[in-house]
Image 1: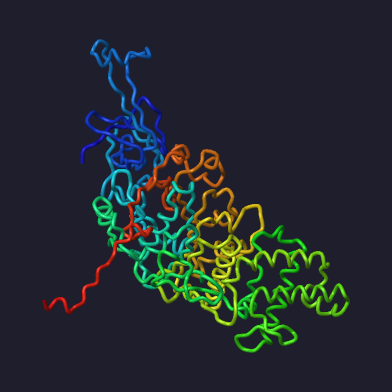
Image 2: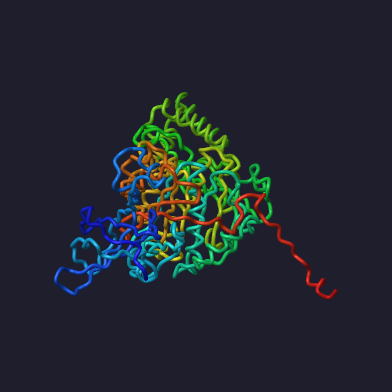
Length: 553
């Protein structure tokens, strides 16, 4: 192995940083991995320094004037080109913290040396998560993803440029193929924008060439997702047709019955636009939720009835009953019934609740209706895609909140982390905002803080991590960043972007991400290829099925 340069003596070296002078005919670029062999003065003991190139410089030695470069190119003025690379140390073997000696040879780390530089040699369970700028496979310590040592992923970046969802899919695909517990894990994705994720079980006609070579290099089989369950809201209440125009085949509608809505205490998820969680409005929400749960316990099977035995078969019917209860209080006909529903809340607060409930009900009629429940059974499929893209914001909040609550409750009741479920949720800043109340913020906090022990892993994506509840971001062991806005990158949430990575984050291209994981002290720049699965109808490759009888001709 030939050296690419030597440790410079014209720049100070220390145990954590040094400069390499690149020899003629070689080159070092940003993110290259370097290894330097050094010896203690007067000793034969060898020390190896491993590091990442964080800065490269070129300048002319021996000239002073601004335009002397033109004279040098013409051969009039003699000068040498100085080519230097600043290396940030990631590892020292053995751990003797002395600086390397000027003149020590520097090598491009490869093979086992690369594994040591990036701590791959200590990862018992590793999965490929992309390629470096030099084409080497970048690995992630799976133990910091699946809950053994840590859990959860936070992906940030500008909308449409950072490819957050695309990378979340790629990461999930790698887990399904290379994780040591891959036979006991499931994935669940909320499709929040467009219909992109409704085609991931189809081949991508654009896939091939370099993309296929990259998959082979990472040891991943290039094929679409298999065993995928697709779910979408119905077109109208009680309909068997999903509200997906471009694709109907293989998609099941989902909905909640009024009985389940009451039993599970799902009313709070209809109030996505609530104020402070301690306000009187939320007192009413809790009281009405408790009353509905009480009615569900005493109602006949599969039917929800009120105290007088009248069936409540829709949200509109429930609104009528609530209106009736308030009017009975105002006319003093039945004040005791009002206390059962609204407690000690003033009628003005009850009317405020009713107005918000009526607004929410108008957007959720097709989701909560009648006697029949069409559940989303995530355990039946390796990957479950729940389409919420065409729903109003309140309806989206209801679906996400109801699903996460059920999953978390099921995992708590089982007490077994397996089967594990990886939940991919985009627009996390809307569901768990930093400074505002959200009906599902508490659930997401529970997942972030206790999910690793229950086998619920959150892969959260957001445009701005600074607007997400900080405990959720802080509990994510793996942090990934695509292109960021210049003001966003200055937030404390991106302090893991050391060196010049903050500056580089504002100019990243599609398919490039910055990855931070606990095993490696510095962030790593990665590229990930286009997936072999389609994300649009136009990309989906039609499959031609030829009957067996044609083989006889």
